[in-house]
Image (cartoon, rainbow, N blue to C red; front, top):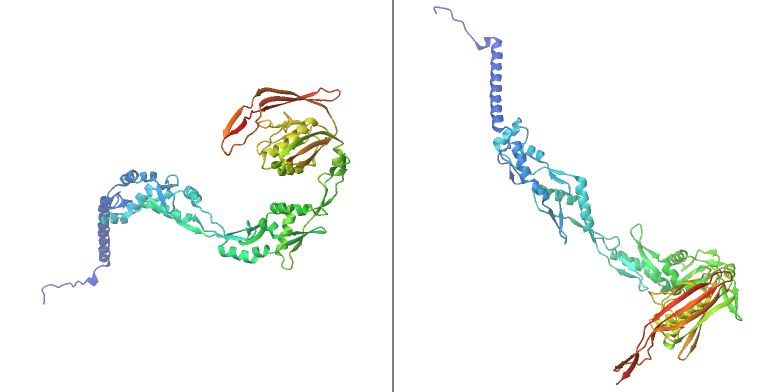
Amino acid sequence: MSLWSRRKVYVDNLPQTHDLRFAALFACGLIALLGGLYAVGYYVAGDRVPGGTTVAGVDLGNLTTAEAEAELADKVKPRLDRPIRLKGSDRELTLEPRQSGLTFDIDATVDRALDGESWDPRHMLRVLLGGDDLSPVIAVNQTALDQQLRRLASRLFDKPVESSVSFASGRPRVTAGNAGVELDIPLTRERVIAAFTRGSAVARLPLRAVAPQISPTEAADFVADVAAPAVSAPVDIAVGRDDVRLRPGQFSRSLQAEVSKDGGLRLAIDAESLFLRSRAQINALPSRPVDAKIRLVSGRPVVVPSRTGLAVTEQALADSVLRALRRSDSRRAVAETQVVEARFTTREVRDLQIRQRLSSSVVSYEAVERDAVLKQANNLDGTLLGAGRRFDFAKSAGLPDSDGASSVVASATFAAAFHAGMTAFERTENHSFDDRFTQGLDAYVSASRDLAFRNSTPFGVYVRATTTAYSTGGSVNVELWGSRYFDIEVASNGRYNVVPAGLEILGGPGCRPSFGANGFETDVRRVMSRRGETPQIDTVHSSYAAVPRISCQG
């Protein structure tokens, strides 16, 4: 037995407060430890970029935020002035980053490199473990970039060539088309931004083919199904009670193949061309309107009355031909017509007061000029010129290939107009004088030099042109008819400043002798008077060059 009594102590019998104190002490110690570690980490890492961090090849490791921003601005921003070369086409193309709305976001790039704020434990851990190679943050002005890309796309766009069908030869012919090229703008945007981000000076353009709407097969099918049958036979067009038959040779060259709204080919027609090819038949219809005209009966002018008739417009004729071509049962259609008056009515022609011959001029022509002279005289004959209206020789008579023939009819017209009291002349004399013409009253007409004048009288003028032919040539007689308004006197002052023709002696098989002509100047004076009015005096000046006489020897 023991000398004193012992007290048993068991853990289970400790006061409950013992456990609470232990837990509190443990937590405080842990917090102190973590706080110390955090303080050490913050002190070590601080406002620094993790070591080993690079951005677009620029080393930012262990730099502070301000140092990193300055380094990036110094090394990366110059890339804004370096154009990006665009490859993928046969053109030398570049894109300027600044103008295209591309720039670097320095602040966002450094924030990415820091991987969090300086107090962020993840940032401290990244500093401890080291950084990575990062891409810079790019700021994109979408509007500016897309504007540059659209300009680029317009330069690169190559429109597809449609397969076509032409009727130039009178028969349908297929011309194969080919695909075009266009720029894929969304993909180009991605590639340009990617190249700029990684610092590449080159970006490859994504070009894609653009298929034409009409393929060669579709064009060939159109010819077989539509075009070839269309030109296989004539068409009959009803114009009022009369019929006009148009042969394929008349309408086929006016046909066209157009792309319709649904993307296929359809048959069309050039209305103006068709009407020109059909004009002779349309004008020959008995139901057509007929203009009033002047006819000389027993040497006196008589008005042939006009007649109201049916007219068909260019478009109406074209529409009727297309309807006939599309019919499967018959190749016949009715043209829409309208009742119209003649262009010159009986009253209008009578109001011109064509009563007597005012003047005439006769000019001879050579045998080689016969066809051209006859054609011009036929065109000129019957021309009606209203009071105050202007006459244009080229429009009325036409311009044949032979300049000499044009001078024959034009000279006769000018001389007659001058004696009839016409005014405001536009006229050019011949280079040298020809004895066939009236001295000082000839006229040279070509594609660039016309003869024109104005009817300044209150009456109309009727132009009559007739020809006489014989073996070595012939003559043309131009007459102006109307009502006499002026008393006219015409006189020439003869020749002055005469330049002798001279003589040239030539040889060789190509030599052709000629008489030559003296050069000179002359003036023709006209006095037009009316009772109680001041006379009108006009002077026409002409200057002719000398042409040497050619003598052949040897």
